[in-house]
Length: 407
Image (spheres, one colour):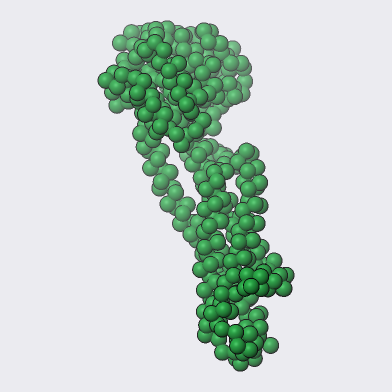
């Protein structure tokens, strides 16, 4: 009976009800967008770093992570790549030979990160073919290279020019070679664009005198939350006395620490937003209570128990909060969904400043379900807490005074 009365009461004054619903729904949308932007930036940062540096999981020679030199390259066991790719959740096992070299053209020279890759498998990791802004992709056995656009710009070279590279190869052999530039690359992280050179894996192995060797095998998964389970499955497939299998969290602790520190500041900002939202909701409930003082006074004067009136008002607030939260939830889904697929690019005047700090100049959004559900529950809980004001007002209310003030 009281639930039915509560439902009728909230729609008796449609204007007041709509104002209340809009204020709470706006709170849900605003907090969801803010949290989505924060989590989206973390996801983008992790994806950019993991998909270029290490992969979500990496298999390499035991001890090579502590001493990352070319001499710690290894010959992968026969069938290891196929074994890893057969595991549930694994998209690809990407072979790599990574080292450094001096890259030169004309009178200019700069240190470069050289990555020997399998073009077919690399599409699962760095998606290198989508980063080409000029030129074409290299074939699996071509003696050509892909150069970061920033590096090419520093060296004053372009597609078709010849890049000269000098380095130290496997076990100290001399490494020197000339390679035609097949294409220029641009990554989201500027520091990568400014120093990277991609070579087909056989070409890199020949250049470094490391035929048949890899520095690592990077594992790509389409379910990052299952990295731990996939790593444990790979450990059962390899000889752990000769090889080690590491997850990205172990390989990039600085990234995790940076995210955790930034997350604290984000939570503080979110708490301040909740404080502002809370005052707005409290003002709405204050207005609702003030407008209904005469009604409350009449109901108490005709003999209605205070506890029953409080329960009736509580049901009204719960219904209002539920409708408003659901409305905000439904409105935020398409909005955040759209921007998660179409990140907001920053204007050019901000782009340079962001790139100086090695940050991709975009606002990315996360559509993780927790973004919506957590904010909805928080705002709903806030509405219930703030309902204490009208309940307390009813408990202390004098019917005669209420009717006089409510006229």
